[in-house]
Image 1 (cartoon, rainbow, N blue to C red):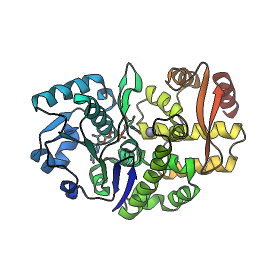
Image 2: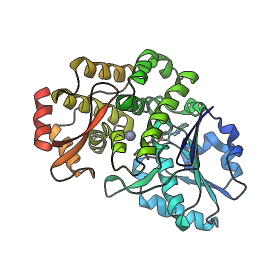
Image 3: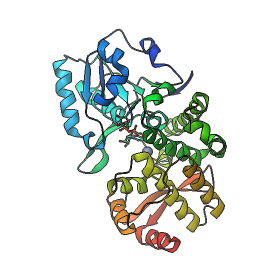
Length: 338
Ligand SMILES: NC(=O)c1ccc[n+]([C@@H]2O[C@H](COP(=O)([O-])OP(=O)(O)OC[C@H]3O[C@@H](n4cnc5c(N)ncnc54)[C@H](O)[C@@H]3O)[C@@H](O)[C@H]2O)c1
Ligand SMILES: [Zn+2]
């Protein structure tokens, strides 16, 4: 097991869920999880009062927060109660949000159960829900006391959900680590076969990259924006398709790379290399969504300012920059590439 510290939060990579008692306080504990996930953690869910919610992005809403709040009142939760979220990015985002606002804040922690949540969603202190079609529009910055990243969790994870998580690992590598990208390239098969050592290494390296960036800019005023590499495209793709977040991020990374190529920030062979790695990881690299639809959704993204978009673009492999690009510029570039 390897621990990474981030603003008082302990991310425990390779820790077994069996050791959870080491981290739980003596005070009251309440679990928040999905009905779908509860069955895999029945021992814990039987031992503590558990609030079960419906899974999926359509349920990441204020209505779910409302439901949980009423359950917490029934359970007589007070500010000393420890709230434990067990699940993927959706449960973690929701748990962190309700725990932070219920009675102005209860301590909380996560058992992070998807690859995507271990490498990204459960780390960094961003919690929230979607609102009126805008992703993560309502939320808070608050750090969990701990995040347990047990590779055993992946044994029950559907294959498609599992592979979706690799896009965030590739993203982390593209932001700061050419070495991590080479490791992924060499070990893609082992990773897809859920080899424990390979996955622990990938999760640890990705969390280290994210923790390093967040420790320098917790509130996303500068360098943290780099973690949004590929995401302005991805959010627009998610809105216009049934693709999962991780799949949309994979396509977003390819589109960001294509724009970077057009601006002379990436070489053609580097773009091809990124695409090939994503393909090796069984991730999509293109979308049939018309560019017009994609761009109009991008304009509605909350990260825009005027008709300019702040895009994070790769600069070679293992580095990226925050660039301001106008929509018309972007339209021309991507059209040229078609
Ligand atoms: N807060 C952040 O910084 C941040 C960063 C990245 C993504 N996110 C958010 O994370 C969410 C996506 O997270 P996700 O990909 O983990 O999706 P998810 O939470 O919906 O989980 C995916 C599916 O896997 C199931 N599942 C989870 N763990 C399981 C297990 N161990 N065994 C079997 N099934 C299991 C869930 O029930 C769900 O159906 C998005 O809402 C995204 O916005 C947040
Ligand atoms: Zn993401």
